[in-house]
Length: 558
Image 1 (cartoon, rainbow, N blue to C red):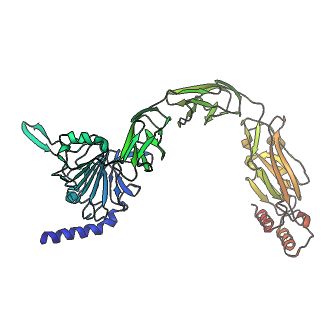
Image 2: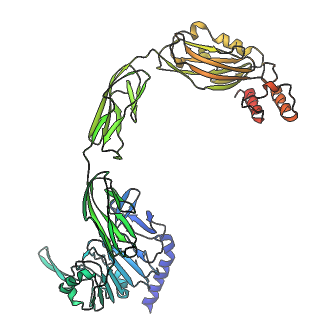
Image 3: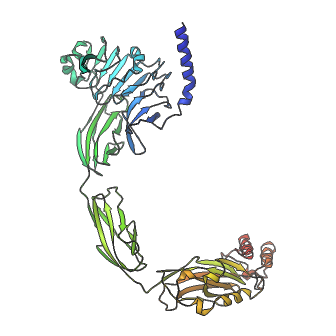
């Protein structure tokens, strides 16, 4: 009585712990939770699984680009579950204590996989071995000895066409001169129930040394999956469509692979080789996990050829050119690696070559162990491309707008700036060090902005050849209107920079003040058309509160 009371107490504690244990897993796929094992290639089924019946544990699981072998079932994982059937692959090496504790409805066990049935250590299947009434043996199981559990089912459904080896054997070994022997015994014990096998295998089971002892044999297992290939070789990135024959004819298949880094498979059996190595692709009958077929794939790297669209290239400073890498076979999925032998002369990014300075270098591309190169000669370019830090602006009268030019290539040049309409705005080239900071600056009195610009724009300093990075462009708003500010070089050979400018002064007093906001406000509120011609500050064709906002920002110097 004391033992039962203590056991009940432990079970109660376990039941209270399960909700906390349920969240301690690394990832979850199809309702089954897993933790990584230390070997980095296998996982353990752990707490956090979602209830399902039948419960089907896969041989392999893929997650975040990796495939892992399902090698263990943790303790307590399925304790108190009400499922009636469980499928366990022979990849599982150990089942933890109480993994199936008090699964009182569990009466059917399915063993899947290829090769020998593992012993599951001294695991928890022994706790439920007496309640298993139906044992389903997968078609890939080849032997059933070497076990610590002894099942006494009423029915065995053995889908293996070749009878699994089940002969009792003995293992002998010496350790420090002592002699040991261990009996390796069959998983089945005193079976006298119904044995169901595939009809094409009747004779094999009748004549097998072990299985012939089960006289109640029924050759009626007709569920079957076959593939048109059992072995295949591919090179990486090749595809192969597997054809499956299924009985029953309308049976749904589930496809999976033992290593997605070697090959993947879609829901129709199309296999894609993804990397060098070996793996198995499985087709399993969705309604019966004991019925499956597999094809063993060997994948190797293909022989790759690599070439460039240009072997020699002449460029000017500032030019760009697209090199095209041709990889055969196509659609390899490999990203080429690009590099320059001298980045001060030319750089490359995804095949786009940019000429930086005069000289010679090599632009190369590599794919796996293949390399192709292009000899690049860069010459100086008389043409300069000029850019400004802005390409459009709204400016108030008696305001200064300071913009910064840049040149490509960055060589000394004499900059010249012109205005398409000096009655709207004027501009000068000045030294950046003594110019106002980039942006707008307002002046309280009419003419002060223009006077400051003239003072700073000393011709001998501002127009002498220099790097564009040492110069600034100062623009003064004169009166309402639009103007185009153009920055080029004195020799006229540069690709110019253009700034589209709109000067705003609603009430025409040549100063941006709160009076301009009042004029716009009256126009919006009462339809006062006195200043209708200049009320559309932003030039979008409408007079809205947005125009007032622009003037407000201009007053603040924004």
